[in-house]
Length: 130
Image 1 (spheres, rainbow, N blue to C red):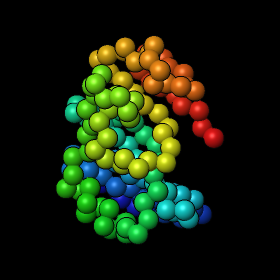
Image 2: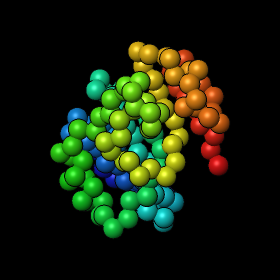
Image 3: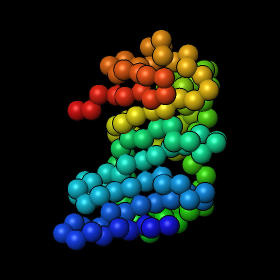
């Protein structure tokens, strides 16, 4: 996997993958100034279900590579989960912002109060960005 991408005139972009080679963290040079990363979560079938930003400080890029290289970043959906928009919260629990969520197999969430301040179509929930 490409873990560092360098384009002319731009500082490097970092990418971290899990044990199934799915992108789970990315960071551009602007995010690096404030220790922010974009995270990506997946369901058991490997479909991206959630992305957002998280602050990870005090951990080196190499350490993140080693940690997630041996991890399977998956979350599960259940209508009994009343927080985290119906998904488990095994990874990146201290997220700063949520950019989007995707739902598969069940669309009962559309009329739910989980989506305050956002809008939904059949697959993706779009949350307002600041």
